[in-house]
Length: 207
Image (cartoon, rainbow, N blue to C red; front, side, top):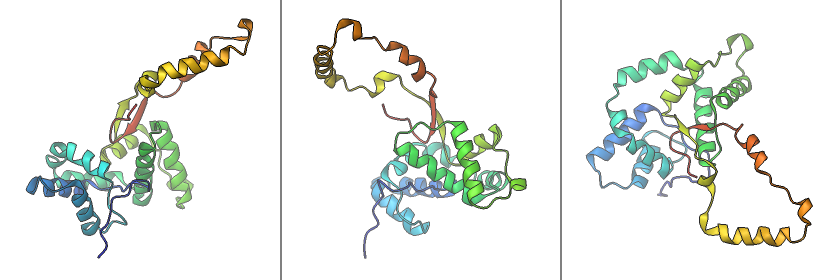
């Protein structure tokens, strides 16, 4: 029988709080069980299309204390109150996870816009469309354990080992131009600072 392997490039798998709690309990009973095995068991017992990625399992286990101390009754009542269109909710969560893995910044406004498009695409009538308010966004983040993370500055994405080579390369290019044709482009940082400084994800975006 073929072994189910966690996917690395495909759209991430979205899990409910109940499923995350079960994974935490499995780990608590046998802490030596590899995360890959936990992912395989989750795929079997939750009838998933594929096993969750190792990063997903790791994130769940790091938040195990919070997950295990939340009552199942509270989770169920919250889910019943908040989820009007479950298919849209699940597709939206998968979309956020996909962009998280691609290291793309996802803002609250972007999530709301995507939610509207997914709802319309799934056939939700205009008169039934949700407002996708801040309250809706907070409930969506809570259901899927999404948090708001502060983005690092420009230095977070710079490989310091490459700096000397890059400086030398820039100097070689500058030799081809007269001094009056060389400009300092620091002002373009104004446009950079207009971008969102926070992202919504299940884990901190790496620099």
